[in-house]
Length: 147
Image (cartoon, rainbow, N blue to C red; front, side, top):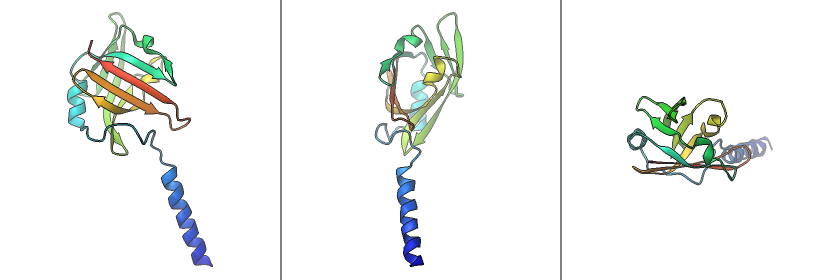
């Protein structure tokens, strides 16, 4: 009887560990983008936010007029001519999918884009990102383009 109970417990733990993954999104994102490819693309000076949707609400205007610069050393800035917001960026992976991890502090609206974004696509002119909340499953989208 104890052997059956141990097997049942082991099976239950296995099922729970698979279903309780801490991944924030297991469906979207690219699996074949390397750190060097991401670095080369994002550090190619001057990006603007053309789409920022949080929970289905378009909040792109919060970043109107700002140009984002991502430096090879992991630092970043967002500047609109009179204001500069300092931040950081990093490459990462989750479930073998490439991520762009952004941090621009905790002040509104900058904390809203401070996420670990899955890279949907990246090119010389467009960076398309998505983030699915592990808490409520809400989806955010962020797109940078060359001005």
